[in-house]
Image (cartoon, rainbow, N blue to C red; front, side, top):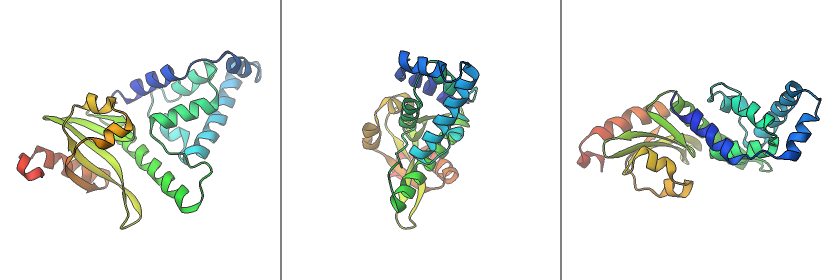
Length: 210
């Protein structure tokens, strides 16, 4: 796997600072770290799905070992609410909590599309996942895949395109910066089509990418 797990875990640990009161509360749950961790996992899993409409297990599958970031947060006294908010933010998930009907389904499906890109990025050393985007190096810049909502079919799909900056430069941008980067050779479709056709297009002469 690429650096997604290590970098994401480091960023989360750097954001979630241990809280003495939370640590004392966790230790008092049952007097057992095993029971305390189990309660934290159950509470965080329930809160995560309520907040974002996707399962916490599907996200922690991307980390190695799987539950390292969850157990570390429990043992450091991070509250389940802070853990959920920070992890969801790092994956650029939108909250569905309190949303109704079609809008909630729209947000949930968008989160599922971002998770699919994270899973795709985790499958290859060539890709990195950052703020809802998958990005890989290419000659003269980077190749990006992002969720795309197709209004014609009312469904989330994907878009791929080239950007004139390195993978590390793109990953370091905030979400607004990523969205504003000039792009070329955009392709729409499912992940596999975007990766294959987009890469072929990016390898073509510049005149063909316009």
